[in-house]
Length: 407
Image (cartoon, rainbow, N blue to C red; front, top):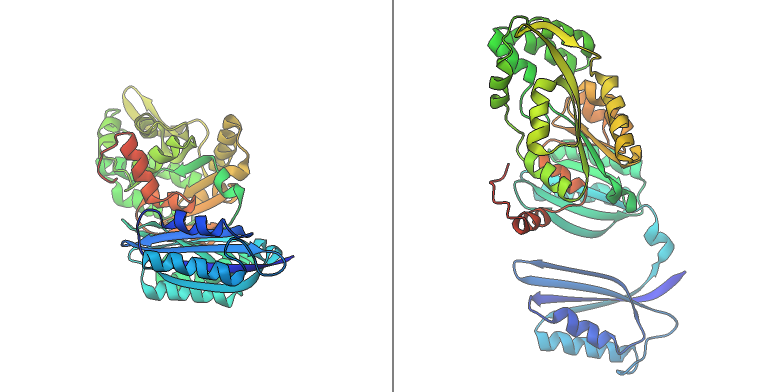
């Protein structure tokens, strides 16, 4: 069913009472509010109100449609604002079809990138209904509400444009399911933290080059993870147990890691880590960050020295997916409400199993398989994909008295 509409747009200096004044005038006419959007950029306000009415022109205290027009013009004149009024119709069925959220991240975000993204959206026959900025630093993040698009076709088009423009673009279906994600499961090495723990250990054992070479082969998917882990761990034989305490001090979190975990925990998300690394290090991360669940390998220690072997079942590619399923069951959360984040080939199964799979500064094989890829070096950029803005994070930190520098 189509409804007749008026789109009223006021533009001018921002000040208290503009919205109240406009709606007070509209209240005198038999119209309903179909949509409202307001944005303030550097003290300049743009307020758009879409009102709908059935049948003929609306009449009210001001008379006919012309009366409404005159009343709104008076508001604009009194407030020294520019006014635009457009008439039309809106189809409810069309408005609800194919609604998507398109999130664009860039550091920097250039006009050329936005031109390319918006051009591809138009080429897909879709419409941009709303644009909102979620962050201005350390990356710029813009979210677009898009309607009338096929999700798969849109994702393919925008992925190509993102690669061309060197920005990150995520495409997600709109609706309640986007806000229903309640379990985050994250890889550790080169994701939550900036290094590979086994390479930190290898540096102390004097075998860094050989271990790094095998690690790279495994991350690219060229070597079975269990086999690669066995080969690398064997090179650590003889290291003293005290090395764990020293390596734990060398661990550096990825920028934004603390912010990401703190914010999601504040919102009652469950947070888990899964690692092909070692419990002797991940246990300290769990304690420091307040992480809910974890799974990792355990290095065998006998008489105070590493034996070069792993104790128990190896947490490999299938093991990470099983851990995700186990954590979701323990938390009472459906798999569809989980998010998996990783960077290497051994993360592929859990990324495929999760409700949303995110490749974070990942190898090409992972970027191709994930629902979306984030290539900026800030882990809390993940928040923007969940619709959480930088301003909301900072406001919550201020309320809780968090004054730590960005990290």
